[in-house]
Length: 491
Length: 98
Ligand SMILES: Cc1ncc(C[n+]2csc(CCOP(=O)(O)OP(=O)(O)O)c2C)c(N)n1
Picture 1 (tube, rainbow over the protein chains, first blue to last red):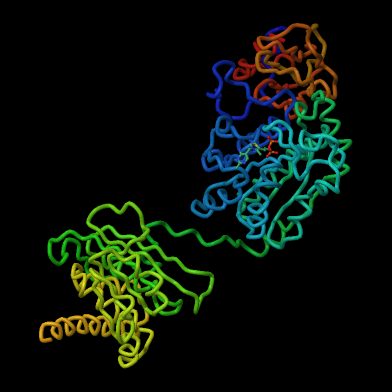
Picture 2: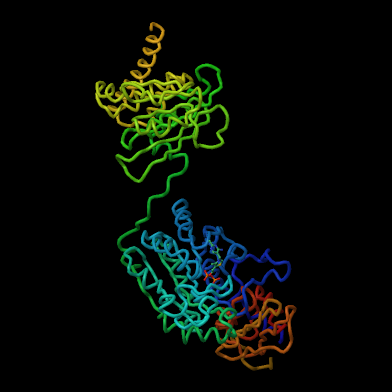
Protein backbone atom coordinates (compact mmCIF):
# COMPACT_ATOMS: atom_id res chain seq x y z
CA UNK A 1 0.00 0.00 0.00
CA UNK A 2 1.55 3.29 -1.00
CA UNK A 3 1.84 6.15 1.44
CA UNK A 4 -0.32 8.72 -0.33
CA UNK A 5 -3.21 6.29 -0.44
CA UNK A 6 -3.28 5.34 3.24
CA UNK A 7 -3.05 8.91 4.39
CA UNK A 8 -6.54 9.47 3.05
CA UNK A 9 -8.24 7.33 5.66
CA UNK A 10 -9.61 8.42 9.02
CA UNK A 11 -11.15 6.33 11.74
CA UNK A 12 -14.86 6.01 11.08
CA UNK A 13 -15.69 3.31 13.59
CA UNK A 14 -13.27 2.75 16.45
CA UNK A 15 -12.98 2.06 20.10
CA UNK A 16 -15.34 4.27 22.10
CA UNK A 17 -13.85 6.84 24.45
CA UNK A 18 -16.37 5.85 27.11
CA UNK A 19 -14.53 2.57 27.54
CA UNK A 20 -11.46 2.53 29.72
CA UNK A 21 -8.34 2.10 27.66
CA UNK A 22 -7.23 -0.78 29.87
CA UNK A 23 -9.52 -3.12 31.75
CA UNK A 24 -7.82 -3.64 35.07
CA UNK A 25 -9.57 -6.85 35.83
CA UNK A 26 -7.27 -8.97 33.74
CA UNK A 27 -3.53 -9.39 34.08
CA UNK A 28 -2.83 -9.42 30.37
CA UNK A 29 -4.61 -8.38 27.20
CA UNK A 30 -6.27 -5.66 29.18
CA UNK A 31 -8.02 -4.18 26.18
CA UNK A 32 -10.16 -7.31 25.81
CA UNK A 33 -13.39 -8.08 27.71
CA UNK A 34 -14.22 -11.16 29.76
CA UNK A 35 -17.13 -12.05 27.46
CA UNK A 36 -17.22 -15.31 25.51
CA UNK A 37 -16.72 -15.16 21.73
CA UNK A 38 -19.95 -13.95 20.12
CA UNK A 39 -21.57 -12.76 23.35
CA UNK A 40 -24.46 -10.32 22.96
CA UNK A 41 -23.37 -8.40 26.05
CA UNK A 42 -20.20 -7.31 24.28
CA UNK A 43 -22.09 -6.00 21.28
CA UNK A 44 -24.56 -4.08 23.42
CA UNK A 45 -21.73 -2.67 25.56
CA UNK A 46 -20.25 -1.21 22.42
CA UNK A 47 -23.53 0.28 21.29
CA UNK A 48 -24.00 1.86 24.67
CA UNK A 49 -20.46 3.22 24.82
CA UNK A 50 -20.88 4.73 21.40
CA UNK A 51 -24.11 6.48 22.33
CA UNK A 52 -22.48 7.90 25.46
CA UNK A 53 -19.67 9.22 23.26
CA UNK A 54 -21.99 10.65 20.65
CA UNK A 55 -24.27 12.40 23.10
CA UNK A 56 -21.29 13.82 25.01
CA UNK A 57 -22.62 12.64 28.36
CA UNK A 58 -19.69 10.60 29.63
CA UNK A 59 -19.02 12.95 32.54
CA UNK A 60 -22.56 12.82 33.85
CA UNK A 61 -23.49 9.22 33.13
CA UNK A 62 -23.99 6.82 36.02
CA UNK A 63 -24.28 3.20 35.05
CA UNK A 64 -26.01 0.80 37.40
CA UNK A 65 -24.66 -2.67 36.72
CA UNK A 66 -26.33 -6.01 37.37
CA UNK A 67 -25.45 -9.41 38.72
CA UNK A 68 -24.92 -11.86 35.89
CA UNK A 69 -22.51 -11.96 32.98
CA UNK A 70 -22.92 -8.19 32.64
CA UNK A 71 -21.63 -7.66 36.19
CA UNK A 72 -18.38 -5.98 35.19
CA UNK A 73 -19.80 -2.82 33.65
CA UNK A 74 -17.63 -0.87 36.09
CA UNK A 75 -14.48 -2.41 34.66
CA UNK A 76 -15.37 -1.32 31.16
CA UNK A 77 -17.23 1.97 31.19
CA UNK A 78 -15.32 5.06 32.16
CA UNK A 79 -18.40 6.69 33.71
CA UNK A 80 -19.88 6.74 37.20
CA UNK A 81 -20.57 3.15 38.21
CA UNK A 82 -22.63 1.42 40.84
CA UNK A 83 -23.15 -2.31 41.24
CA UNK A 84 -26.66 -3.22 42.30
CA UNK A 85 -27.64 -6.40 44.12
CA UNK A 86 -29.26 -9.02 41.91
CA UNK A 87 -32.43 -7.55 40.36
CA UNK A 88 -32.23 -4.23 42.17
CA UNK A 89 -30.79 -2.02 39.44
CA UNK A 90 -34.09 -0.16 38.84
CA UNK A 91 -34.38 0.67 42.54
CA UNK A 92 -30.77 1.81 42.74
CA UNK A 93 -31.15 3.79 39.52
CA UNK A 94 -34.24 5.45 41.00
CA UNK A 95 -32.30 6.60 44.03
CA UNK A 96 -29.37 7.83 41.96
CA UNK A 97 -31.53 9.75 39.53
CA UNK A 98 -33.63 11.33 42.23
CA UNK A 99 -30.66 12.46 44.25
CA UNK A 100 -28.69 13.58 41.19
CA UNK A 101 -31.32 14.66 38.69
CA UNK A 102 -28.69 16.13 36.38
CA UNK A 103 -27.09 12.73 35.85
CA UNK A 104 -27.90 10.36 33.05
CA UNK A 105 -28.70 7.13 34.84
CA UNK A 106 -28.61 3.90 32.89
CA UNK A 107 -29.57 0.52 34.29
CA UNK A 108 -28.21 -2.61 32.67
CA UNK A 109 -29.72 -6.01 33.47
CA UNK A 110 -29.98 -9.57 32.24
CA UNK A 111 -33.23 -11.48 32.02
CA UNK A 112 -32.63 -13.51 35.16
CA UNK A 113 -31.81 -10.32 36.94
CA UNK A 114 -34.67 -8.22 35.61
CA UNK A 115 -37.49 -10.66 34.99
CA UNK A 116 -36.97 -13.16 37.82
CA UNK A 117 -35.49 -11.89 41.07
CA UNK A 118 -35.96 -8.25 40.08
CA UNK A 119 -39.47 -8.42 38.66
CA UNK A 120 -40.94 -6.21 41.38
CA UNK A 121 -38.28 -3.52 41.05
CA UNK A 122 -38.64 -3.14 37.31
CA UNK A 123 -42.43 -3.12 37.47
CA UNK A 124 -42.56 -0.35 40.03
CA UNK A 125 -39.77 1.73 38.55
CA UNK A 126 -41.70 1.62 35.26
CA UNK A 127 -44.98 2.34 36.98
CA UNK A 128 -43.50 5.37 38.71
CA UNK A 129 -42.10 6.45 35.38
CA UNK A 130 -38.63 6.94 36.79
CA UNK A 131 -36.50 9.14 34.57
CA UNK A 132 -33.96 6.44 33.83
CA UNK A 133 -32.98 4.37 30.81
CA UNK A 134 -32.83 0.61 31.11
CA UNK A 135 -31.05 -1.85 28.88
CA UNK A 136 -32.46 -5.33 29.28
CA UNK A 137 -30.42 -8.20 27.85
CA UNK A 138 -32.67 -11.18 27.15
CA UNK A 139 -30.65 -14.28 26.36
CA UNK A 140 -33.37 -16.64 27.59
CA UNK A 141 -31.23 -18.17 30.34
CA UNK A 142 -29.21 -17.51 33.47
CA UNK A 143 -25.84 -17.60 31.79
CA UNK A 144 -23.39 -16.68 34.47
CA UNK A 145 -24.52 -19.40 36.84
CA UNK A 146 -24.30 -22.07 34.17
CA UNK A 147 -27.54 -22.07 32.23
CA UNK A 148 -30.58 -22.40 34.48
CA UNK A 149 -34.01 -21.54 33.13
CA UNK A 150 -35.16 -17.93 33.31
CA UNK A 151 -38.74 -16.65 33.10
CA UNK A 152 -37.81 -15.83 29.49
CA UNK A 153 -36.69 -19.34 28.53
CA UNK A 154 -38.57 -20.55 25.45
CA UNK A 155 -41.02 -23.43 25.59
CA UNK A 156 -39.14 -26.60 24.79
CA UNK A 157 -35.76 -24.97 25.46
CA UNK A 158 -33.42 -27.23 27.40
CA UNK A 159 -31.60 -25.71 30.33
CA UNK A 160 -29.97 -27.28 33.36
CA UNK A 161 -33.21 -26.83 35.29
CA UNK A 162 -35.47 -27.83 32.41
CA UNK A 163 -33.52 -30.84 31.15
CA UNK A 164 -36.48 -32.09 29.11
CA UNK A 165 -37.22 -28.66 27.72
CA UNK A 166 -39.35 -25.97 29.32
CA UNK A 167 -42.93 -27.06 29.62
CA UNK A 168 -45.78 -24.65 30.20
CA UNK A 169 -47.31 -27.02 32.71
CA UNK A 170 -44.17 -27.11 34.83
CA UNK A 171 -42.53 -23.74 34.43
CA UNK A 172 -45.18 -21.52 32.90
CA UNK A 173 -44.86 -19.53 29.69
CA UNK A 174 -42.07 -17.25 28.49
CA UNK A 175 -42.46 -13.88 30.12
CA UNK A 176 -42.99 -10.92 27.83
CA UNK A 177 -41.50 -8.02 29.69
CA UNK A 178 -42.07 -5.30 27.09
CA UNK A 179 -45.71 -6.29 26.63
CA UNK A 180 -46.21 -6.37 30.39
CA UNK A 181 -44.65 -2.98 31.02
CA UNK A 182 -46.47 -1.46 28.08
CA UNK A 183 -49.77 -1.91 29.96
CA UNK A 184 -48.61 0.79 32.39
CA UNK A 185 -49.40 4.47 31.93
CA UNK A 186 -46.08 6.00 32.92
CA UNK A 187 -43.37 4.63 30.61
CA UNK A 188 -42.25 6.87 27.77
CA UNK A 189 -40.56 4.42 25.47
CA UNK A 190 -40.38 0.63 25.32
CA UNK A 191 -38.92 -1.28 22.42
CA UNK A 192 -37.73 -4.81 21.79
CA UNK A 193 -34.80 -5.25 19.43
CA UNK A 194 -32.54 -8.14 18.51
CA UNK A 195 -29.02 -9.00 17.51
CA UNK A 196 -30.14 -11.68 15.04
CA UNK A 197 -28.69 -10.08 11.91
CA UNK A 198 -27.27 -6.83 10.58
CA UNK A 199 -30.62 -5.17 10.15
CA UNK A 200 -31.72 -6.06 13.66
CA UNK A 201 -28.44 -4.92 15.15
CA UNK A 202 -28.66 -1.57 13.43
CA UNK A 203 -32.13 -1.07 14.85
CA UNK A 204 -30.85 -2.13 18.28
CA UNK A 205 -28.21 0.54 18.12
CA UNK A 206 -30.79 3.19 17.18
CA UNK A 207 -33.17 2.11 19.93
CA UNK A 208 -30.48 2.28 22.60
CA UNK A 209 -29.64 5.76 21.45
CA UNK A 210 -33.26 6.72 21.65
CA UNK A 211 -33.64 5.45 25.21
CA UNK A 212 -30.70 7.54 26.37
CA UNK A 213 -31.69 10.58 24.33
CA UNK A 214 -35.11 10.54 25.97
CA UNK A 215 -33.44 10.94 29.32
CA UNK A 216 -31.16 13.68 28.05
CA UNK A 217 -34.34 15.43 26.90
CA UNK A 218 -35.80 15.19 30.39
CA UNK A 219 -38.32 12.50 29.54
CA UNK A 220 -39.17 9.59 31.80
CA UNK A 221 -38.79 5.85 31.75
CA UNK A 222 -37.36 4.13 28.67
CA UNK A 223 -36.54 0.47 28.34
CA UNK A 224 -34.91 -1.42 25.49
CA UNK A 225 -35.06 -5.20 25.54
CA UNK A 226 -32.32 -6.77 23.43
CA UNK A 227 -32.66 -10.38 22.29
CA UNK A 228 -29.04 -11.38 22.63
CA UNK A 229 -27.08 -14.51 21.77
CA UNK A 230 -25.36 -16.64 24.39
CA UNK A 231 -23.42 -19.14 22.29
CA UNK A 232 -21.73 -20.79 25.25
CA UNK A 233 -24.81 -21.75 27.23
CA UNK A 234 -26.90 -22.40 24.15
CA UNK A 235 -24.12 -24.73 22.98
CA UNK A 236 -24.03 -23.15 19.54
CA UNK A 237 -21.38 -21.45 17.48
CA UNK A 238 -21.60 -17.65 17.58
CA UNK A 239 -23.07 -17.61 14.09
CA UNK A 240 -25.62 -20.32 14.93
CA UNK A 241 -26.54 -18.46 18.09
CA UNK A 242 -27.08 -15.28 16.13
CA UNK A 243 -29.41 -17.13 13.77
CA UNK A 244 -31.27 -18.66 16.68
CA UNK A 245 -32.08 -15.17 17.89
CA UNK A 246 -33.55 -14.32 14.53
CA UNK A 247 -35.25 -17.62 13.75
CA UNK A 248 -36.47 -18.80 17.15
CA UNK A 249 -36.40 -16.04 19.73
CA UNK A 250 -38.00 -13.46 17.51
CA UNK A 251 -41.00 -15.73 16.97
CA UNK A 252 -41.71 -15.75 20.69
CA UNK A 253 -40.57 -12.20 21.31
CA UNK A 254 -41.73 -10.04 18.40
CA UNK A 255 -39.51 -7.04 17.79
CA UNK A 256 -40.96 -3.57 17.73
CA UNK A 257 -42.02 -0.53 19.68
CA UNK A 258 -44.41 -1.40 22.50
CA UNK A 259 -44.92 2.05 23.89
CA UNK A 260 -43.98 5.48 22.61
CA UNK A 261 -45.21 8.53 24.45
CA UNK A 262 -42.19 10.60 23.48
CA UNK A 263 -44.13 13.19 21.55
CA UNK A 264 -46.99 13.51 24.01
CA UNK A 265 -44.60 13.91 26.92
CA UNK A 266 -42.51 16.46 25.09
CA UNK A 267 -45.63 18.48 24.41
CA UNK A 268 -46.95 18.09 27.93
CA UNK A 269 -43.78 19.65 29.28
CA UNK A 270 -41.39 18.10 31.72
CA UNK A 271 -42.70 16.20 34.68
CA UNK A 272 -39.62 15.52 36.75
CA UNK A 273 -40.20 14.01 40.15
CA UNK A 274 -39.33 16.22 43.09
CA UNK A 275 -35.65 16.23 43.89
CA UNK A 276 -34.88 14.17 46.97
CA UNK A 277 -34.05 16.37 49.96
CA UNK A 278 -30.50 16.39 51.20
CA UNK A 279 -29.67 14.93 54.60
CA UNK A 280 -29.30 18.30 56.25
CA UNK A 281 -32.76 19.35 55.04
CA UNK A 282 -34.46 16.42 56.74
CA UNK A 283 -34.67 17.79 60.31
CA UNK A 284 -36.39 20.92 58.96
CA UNK A 285 -38.90 18.84 56.98
CA UNK A 286 -39.62 16.73 60.04
CA UNK A 287 -39.93 19.85 62.18
CA UNK A 288 -37.05 18.89 64.43
CA UNK A 289 -34.43 21.32 63.14
CA UNK A 290 -32.24 22.57 65.95
CA UNK A 291 -33.41 26.14 65.36
CA UNK A 292 -37.02 25.15 66.08
CA UNK A 293 -36.16 23.48 69.35
CA UNK A 294 -35.41 24.61 72.85
CA UNK A 295 -31.72 24.50 73.58
CA UNK A 296 -30.16 21.10 74.15
CA UNK A 297 -29.25 20.16 77.67
CA UNK A 298 -26.28 17.89 77.17
CA UNK A 299 -24.33 17.33 80.35
CA UNK A 300 -27.10 18.92 82.38
CA UNK A 301 -28.03 15.58 83.90
CA UNK A 302 -29.42 15.81 87.34
CA UNK A 303 -26.88 14.36 89.74
CA UNK A 304 -23.74 12.64 88.72
CA UNK A 305 -24.87 9.11 89.41
CA UNK A 306 -24.54 6.34 86.88
CA UNK A 307 -27.56 6.10 84.60
CA UNK A 308 -28.84 2.75 83.43
CA UNK A 309 -32.56 2.98 82.93
CA UNK A 310 -34.10 -0.14 81.45
CA UNK A 311 -37.75 0.56 80.99
CA UNK A 312 -40.62 -1.47 79.69
CA UNK A 313 -43.87 0.38 78.97
CA UNK A 314 -46.92 -1.78 78.37
CA UNK A 315 -50.63 -1.29 77.78
CA UNK A 316 -53.28 -1.40 75.11
CA UNK A 317 -52.74 0.08 71.69
CA UNK A 318 -54.10 3.64 71.69
CA UNK A 319 -53.06 4.35 75.28
CA UNK A 320 -49.94 6.14 74.14
CA UNK A 321 -47.53 3.45 75.27
CA UNK A 322 -45.12 4.02 72.42
CA UNK A 323 -45.23 7.81 72.72
CA UNK A 324 -44.44 7.63 76.42
CA UNK A 325 -41.34 5.61 75.57
CA UNK A 326 -40.37 7.91 72.72
CA UNK A 327 -40.57 11.06 74.80
CA UNK A 328 -38.48 9.40 77.48
CA UNK A 329 -35.83 8.29 74.97
CA UNK A 330 -35.83 11.65 73.23
CA UNK A 331 -35.36 13.44 76.55
CA UNK A 332 -32.42 11.14 77.30
CA UNK A 333 -30.93 11.96 73.93
CA UNK A 334 -31.31 15.66 74.61
CA UNK A 335 -29.52 15.19 77.91
CA UNK A 336 -26.57 13.61 76.16
CA UNK A 337 -27.24 9.99 77.07
CA UNK A 338 -27.11 6.95 74.83
CA UNK A 339 -30.67 5.80 74.27
CA UNK A 340 -32.70 3.17 72.47
CA UNK A 341 -36.42 2.79 71.85
CA UNK A 342 -37.85 -0.40 70.47
CA UNK A 343 -41.57 -0.74 69.87
CA UNK A 344 -43.23 -4.12 69.94
CA UNK A 345 -46.83 -4.39 68.91
CA UNK A 346 -49.31 -6.51 67.04
CA UNK A 347 -50.88 -5.69 63.72
CA UNK A 348 -53.86 -3.98 65.35
CA UNK A 349 -53.81 -0.19 65.31
CA UNK A 350 -56.07 0.00 68.36
CA UNK A 351 -57.06 -2.34 71.15
CA UNK A 352 -54.26 -4.86 70.67
CA UNK A 353 -51.58 -5.04 73.31
CA UNK A 354 -48.58 -2.89 72.80
CA UNK A 355 -45.34 -2.32 74.58
CA UNK A 356 -41.94 -0.79 74.10
CA UNK A 357 -38.42 -1.18 75.37
CA UNK A 358 -36.52 1.96 76.34
CA UNK A 359 -32.94 2.22 77.51
CA UNK A 360 -31.07 5.29 78.71
CA UNK A 361 -27.46 4.96 79.71
CA UNK A 362 -24.23 6.85 80.08
CA UNK A 363 -22.50 3.92 78.38
CA UNK A 364 -23.04 2.63 74.84
CA UNK A 365 -26.10 0.40 74.68
CA UNK A 366 -25.38 -3.15 73.58
CA UNK A 367 -28.93 -4.30 72.95
CA UNK A 368 -32.18 -2.35 72.74
CA UNK A 369 -34.07 -5.29 74.25
CA UNK A 370 -35.22 -4.90 77.81
CA UNK A 371 -35.86 -8.41 79.07
CA UNK A 372 -35.42 -7.55 82.74
CA UNK A 373 -36.54 -3.96 83.32
CA UNK A 374 -35.60 -1.92 86.34
CA UNK A 375 -38.68 0.15 85.67
CA UNK A 376 -42.03 -1.12 84.41
CA UNK A 377 -44.88 1.15 83.42
CA UNK A 378 -48.04 -0.96 83.33
CA UNK A 379 -51.02 0.87 81.95
CA UNK A 380 -53.48 -1.89 82.82
CA UNK A 381 -53.71 -5.08 84.79
CA UNK A 382 -53.04 -7.60 82.00
CA UNK A 383 -49.85 -5.72 81.16
CA UNK A 384 -48.82 -5.72 84.78
CA UNK A 385 -49.36 -9.44 85.06
CA UNK A 386 -47.53 -10.07 81.85
CA UNK A 387 -44.34 -8.26 82.82
CA UNK A 388 -44.13 -7.81 86.60
CA UNK A 389 -42.19 -11.04 87.19
CA UNK A 390 -39.49 -9.85 84.84
CA UNK A 391 -38.76 -6.69 86.86
CA UNK A 392 -35.43 -6.88 88.68
CA UNK A 393 -35.08 -6.87 92.41
CA UNK A 394 -34.91 -3.29 93.57
CA UNK A 395 -36.81 -2.21 90.47
CA UNK A 396 -39.97 -0.15 90.18
CA UNK A 397 -43.46 -0.75 88.86
CA UNK A 398 -45.71 2.19 88.06
CA UNK A 399 -49.27 0.98 87.74
CA UNK A 400 -52.45 2.60 86.52
CA UNK A 401 -54.97 1.52 89.16
CA UNK A 402 -56.29 2.51 92.55
CA UNK A 403 -54.04 0.04 94.25
CA UNK A 404 -51.39 -2.46 93.39
CA UNK A 405 -52.86 -5.99 93.22
CA UNK A 406 -51.91 -7.79 96.42
CA UNK A 407 -50.80 -10.95 94.69
CA UNK A 408 -48.30 -9.01 92.59
CA UNK A 409 -46.54 -7.55 95.59
CA UNK A 410 -43.16 -9.06 96.23
CA UNK A 411 -40.09 -8.48 98.33
CA UNK A 412 -37.62 -6.03 96.85
CA UNK A 413 -40.12 -4.58 94.38
CA UNK A 414 -40.99 -0.87 94.62
CA UNK A 415 -44.45 -0.01 93.48
CA UNK A 416 -46.36 3.15 92.79
CA UNK A 417 -50.02 2.83 91.91
CA UNK A 418 -52.39 5.68 91.13
CA UNK A 419 -55.55 6.09 89.06
CA UNK A 420 -53.63 7.80 86.28
CA UNK A 421 -56.38 7.57 83.70
CA UNK A 422 -58.94 9.15 85.98
CA UNK A 423 -56.49 11.89 86.89
CA UNK A 424 -55.81 12.58 83.22
CA UNK A 425 -59.54 12.73 82.60
CA UNK A 426 -59.82 15.40 85.30
CA UNK A 427 -57.00 17.30 83.61
CA UNK A 428 -58.92 17.38 80.35
CA UNK A 429 -58.44 14.09 78.46
CA UNK A 430 -57.91 10.57 79.64
CA UNK A 431 -55.56 9.94 76.77
CA UNK A 432 -52.98 12.03 78.61
CA UNK A 433 -52.65 9.25 81.21
CA UNK A 434 -49.40 8.19 79.57
CA UNK A 435 -47.89 11.61 80.27
CA UNK A 436 -49.06 11.61 83.89
CA UNK A 437 -47.31 8.26 84.28
CA UNK A 438 -44.24 9.64 82.54
CA UNK A 439 -44.21 12.49 85.08
CA UNK A 440 -44.13 9.99 87.93
CA UNK A 441 -41.46 7.95 86.17
CA UNK A 442 -39.25 11.02 85.70
CA UNK A 443 -39.63 11.93 89.34
CA UNK A 444 -38.76 8.39 90.43
CA UNK A 445 -35.76 8.11 88.14
CA UNK A 446 -34.74 11.72 88.81
CA UNK A 447 -31.91 11.79 86.29
CA UNK A 448 -33.27 13.94 83.48
CA UNK A 449 -33.36 17.73 83.59
CA UNK A 450 -36.82 19.23 83.08
CA UNK A 451 -35.54 21.23 80.10
CA UNK A 452 -34.69 17.98 78.28
CA UNK A 453 -38.18 16.67 78.85
CA UNK A 454 -39.60 19.92 77.52
CA UNK A 455 -37.36 19.68 74.45
CA UNK A 456 -38.45 16.10 73.84
CA UNK A 457 -42.11 17.04 74.11
CA UNK A 458 -41.60 19.77 71.55
CA UNK A 459 -40.07 17.27 69.17
CA UNK A 460 -42.71 14.61 69.60
CA UNK A 461 -45.94 16.55 70.09
CA UNK A 462 -46.87 18.91 67.30
CA UNK A 463 -50.38 19.96 68.29
CA UNK A 464 -50.23 22.96 70.70
CA UNK A 465 -53.38 21.88 72.53
CA UNK A 466 -51.92 18.49 73.29
CA UNK A 467 -48.62 20.08 74.12
CA UNK A 468 -50.20 22.22 76.79
CA UNK A 469 -52.16 19.30 78.22
CA UNK A 470 -49.12 17.01 78.19
CA UNK A 471 -47.03 19.56 80.05
CA UNK A 472 -49.67 19.81 82.72
CA UNK A 473 -49.99 16.04 82.81
CA UNK A 474 -46.27 15.52 83.34
CA UNK A 475 -46.22 18.13 86.11
CA UNK A 476 -49.20 16.42 87.73
CA UNK A 477 -47.45 13.05 87.57
CA UNK A 478 -44.38 14.49 89.31
CA UNK A 479 -46.56 15.98 92.05
CA UNK A 480 -48.40 12.71 92.57
CA UNK A 481 -45.20 10.87 93.29
CA UNK A 482 -43.79 13.60 95.53
CA UNK A 483 -47.07 13.68 97.47
CA UNK A 484 -46.88 9.94 97.95
CA UNK A 485 -43.44 10.34 99.54
CA UNK A 486 -44.80 12.87 101.99
CA UNK A 487 -47.62 10.52 102.84
CA UNK A 488 -45.14 7.78 103.49
CA UNK A 489 -43.10 10.00 105.83
CA UNK A 490 -46.14 11.16 107.72
CA UNK A 491 -47.62 7.69 107.93
CA UNK B 1 -2.60 -0.73 -4.70
CA UNK B 2 -2.08 -0.53 -8.42
CA UNK B 3 -1.52 2.93 -9.94
CA UNK B 4 -4.62 4.51 -11.45
CA UNK B 5 -7.07 2.16 -9.75
CA UNK B 6 -9.75 3.84 -7.59
CA UNK B 7 -8.87 3.48 -3.90
CA UNK B 8 -11.25 1.56 -1.59
CA UNK B 9 -13.82 3.64 0.27
CA UNK B 10 -12.84 1.92 3.48
CA UNK B 11 -10.02 0.21 5.27
CA UNK B 12 -10.08 -2.30 8.05
CA UNK B 13 -7.79 -3.14 10.88
CA UNK B 14 -8.33 -6.25 12.97
CA UNK B 15 -6.40 -6.49 16.21
CA UNK B 16 -5.39 -10.13 16.35
CA UNK B 17 -4.68 -10.06 20.05
CA UNK B 18 -8.16 -8.79 20.87
CA UNK B 19 -10.14 -10.87 18.37
CA UNK B 20 -11.75 -13.99 19.82
CA UNK B 21 -12.57 -15.47 16.44
CA UNK B 22 -16.35 -15.57 16.85
CA UNK B 23 -16.74 -14.97 13.14
CA UNK B 24 -19.70 -12.61 13.42
CA UNK B 25 -17.88 -9.95 11.40
CA UNK B 26 -17.27 -12.43 8.59
CA UNK B 27 -21.00 -13.15 8.54
CA UNK B 28 -21.89 -9.48 8.75
CA UNK B 29 -19.58 -8.04 6.08
CA UNK B 30 -21.71 -7.14 3.03
CA UNK B 31 -18.62 -6.94 0.81
CA UNK B 32 -17.38 -10.34 2.02
CA UNK B 33 -13.83 -9.13 2.54
CA UNK B 34 -13.22 -10.69 5.96
CA UNK B 35 -12.27 -14.33 6.42
CA UNK B 36 -11.12 -16.65 9.17
CA UNK B 37 -7.34 -16.74 9.37
CA UNK B 38 -5.25 -19.87 9.53
CA UNK B 39 -2.94 -18.92 12.39
CA UNK B 40 -3.71 -18.92 16.10
CA UNK B 41 -3.30 -15.94 18.38
CA UNK B 42 -1.87 -15.81 21.89
CA UNK B 43 -5.02 -17.36 23.38
CA UNK B 44 -5.27 -20.00 20.71
CA UNK B 45 -8.11 -18.39 18.80
CA UNK B 46 -8.20 -18.40 15.06
CA UNK B 47 -8.91 -14.80 14.28
CA UNK B 48 -10.64 -12.88 11.56
CA UNK B 49 -8.44 -11.34 8.89
CA UNK B 50 -9.11 -8.66 6.33
CA UNK B 51 -8.64 -9.66 2.73
CA UNK B 52 -6.69 -6.42 2.26
CA UNK B 53 -8.98 -4.82 -0.29
CA UNK B 54 -12.64 -4.17 -0.97
CA UNK B 55 -13.71 -2.60 2.34
CA UNK B 56 -16.49 -0.06 1.85
CA UNK B 57 -16.14 1.45 5.32
CA UNK B 58 -19.76 0.67 6.19
CA UNK B 59 -18.88 -0.23 9.79
CA UNK B 60 -21.31 -3.12 10.18
CA UNK B 61 -18.52 -5.50 11.19
CA UNK B 62 -17.52 -3.03 13.88
CA UNK B 63 -21.04 -2.77 15.19
CA UNK B 64 -21.61 -6.50 15.42
CA UNK B 65 -18.19 -7.33 16.92
CA UNK B 66 -18.48 -7.86 20.69
CA UNK B 67 -15.00 -6.55 21.47
CA UNK B 68 -14.43 -2.84 22.06
CA UNK B 69 -11.45 -2.37 19.78
CA UNK B 70 -10.83 -5.61 17.90
CA UNK B 71 -11.99 -3.92 14.71
CA UNK B 72 -11.28 -0.40 13.53
CA UNK B 73 -12.88 0.85 10.36
CA UNK B 74 -11.36 3.71 8.38
CA UNK B 75 -13.04 5.73 5.72
CA UNK B 76 -11.59 7.53 2.74
CA UNK B 77 -11.84 11.26 3.34
CA UNK B 78 -11.06 12.53 -0.10
CA UNK B 79 -11.89 11.06 -3.45
CA UNK B 80 -8.59 12.34 -4.80
CA UNK B 81 -6.01 9.63 -4.35
CA UNK B 82 -3.19 12.08 -3.81
CA UNK B 83 -4.83 14.16 -1.07
CA UNK B 84 -2.75 14.52 2.07
CA UNK B 85 -4.41 14.59 5.45
CA UNK B 86 -1.97 14.36 8.28
CA UNK B 87 -3.93 13.34 11.34
CA UNK B 88 -5.04 10.14 9.73
CA UNK B 89 -1.48 8.92 9.66
CA UNK B 90 -2.15 6.93 12.84
CA UNK B 91 -4.52 4.68 10.97
CA UNK B 92 -2.23 4.40 8.02
CA UNK B 93 0.34 2.08 9.50
CA UNK B 94 -2.37 -0.04 11.05
CA UNK B 95 -4.09 -0.50 7.73
CA UNK B 96 -0.86 -1.45 6.17
CA UNK B 97 -0.39 -4.22 8.70
CA UNK B 98 -3.40 -6.14 7.42
C1 LIG C 1 -29.37 -12.43 45.49
C2 LIG C 1 -28.69 -13.34 44.53
N1 LIG C 1 -29.32 -14.45 44.13
C3 LIG C 1 -28.74 -15.27 43.25
C4 LIG C 1 -27.50 -14.99 42.75
C5 LIG C 1 -26.84 -15.95 41.78
N2 LIG C 1 -26.84 -15.46 40.42
C6 LIG C 1 -25.75 -14.86 39.89
S1 LIG C 1 -25.97 -14.48 38.27
C7 LIG C 1 -27.53 -15.12 38.25
C8 LIG C 1 -28.40 -15.14 37.03
C9 LIG C 1 -27.95 -14.22 35.96
O1 LIG C 1 -28.78 -14.36 34.83
P1 LIG C 1 -29.12 -13.14 33.90
O2 LIG C 1 -29.59 -12.00 34.70
O3 LIG C 1 -30.01 -13.64 32.83
O4 LIG C 1 -27.71 -12.67 33.31
P2 LIG C 1 -26.76 -13.40 32.29
O5 LIG C 1 -25.69 -14.04 33.10
O6 LIG C 1 -27.57 -14.36 31.49
O7 LIG C 1 -26.22 -12.29 31.47
C10 LIG C 1 -27.86 -15.63 39.51
C11 LIG C 1 -29.13 -16.29 39.83
C12 LIG C 1 -26.86 -13.81 43.19
N3 LIG C 1 -25.66 -13.46 42.76
N4 LIG C 1 -27.48 -13.01 44.09
